[in-house]
Length: 98
Image (cartoon, rainbow, N blue to C red; front, side, top):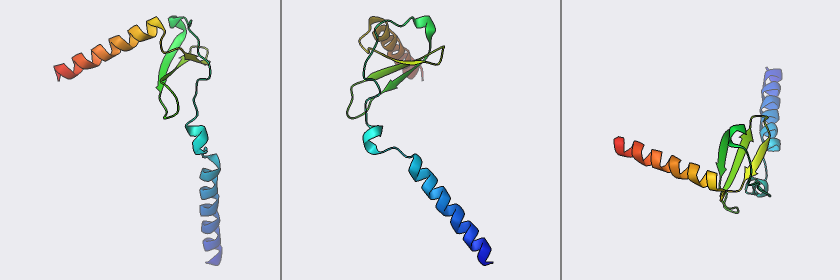
């Protein structure tokens, strides 16, 4: 009976410290992802776009490319501005339809 209690306590301890050690400090969580941006990325090479906004950083756009590389795109790039404008218009139309 005592052995079961010791094993359960050990598992709980390992579980608690395992999660704590993988957590990032707040300063790293709020750090800007993009330190530099690019203006020219062929749109056909982009697999997905991620939009990130943290309290300490401006709007950031991260593109995951087809080769699994991630690059930060300048949010003021003309094609990206048009993409965002079209996406917002689609959302407005979808809201109005409901």
